[in-house]
Length: 257
Image (tube, rainbow, N blue to C red):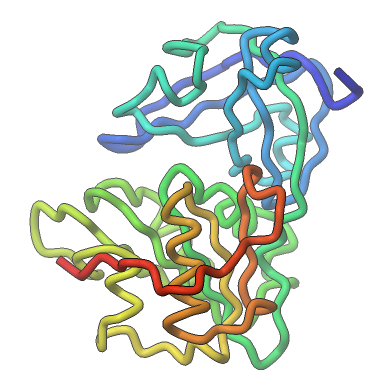
């Protein structure tokens, strides 16, 4: 264990939708990070050293988090015992070991002519939420940003107004809608193949923040189906330690609902 290891106190576990919770932590020393970075959590140092941890993407404003010493992550409620594998049901007052921050994902790097496209799921939306919450977002933001979010139900996107208030266009892909919504019924992969999406793929820079295997599937769709150059796709995944390999044959893509 190095200097990046410290203890964190769970200060709140708040339900924000039917399948999401917001967890806030207070750590024993200030945690400096930038939007896009993530941390590891475990019950003790031994579990961290054995690799028995789960990674979480930080979603709070880095400057404000450092000042208040409150760090925010999101997790699924449907599988709450799994949100930190091996930790069980985390409650307010629990002490956890924290390691990080890690990663160099930066979702605002784009050329002047490119439209930025963020692709995420609710639990991996942290890098983008952290970006728009940052104090210098307006100074650094690209001209156009489209956020595509893969959700199971429409209530899993509680931050939509927050993004839209910052000038980000939000397009939810809802797999199991209970009623009519403004968005797309289906998956991200289905949306890419749908005529309703008016997007010049070759003039966009894509930032993918999704869980595997969908992270890899979306990457393959962009490269193989949409012919997006590799240097226009940035992936955020702590599990990706080697360059992503493009398969020789196109993957199977889900169709829109």
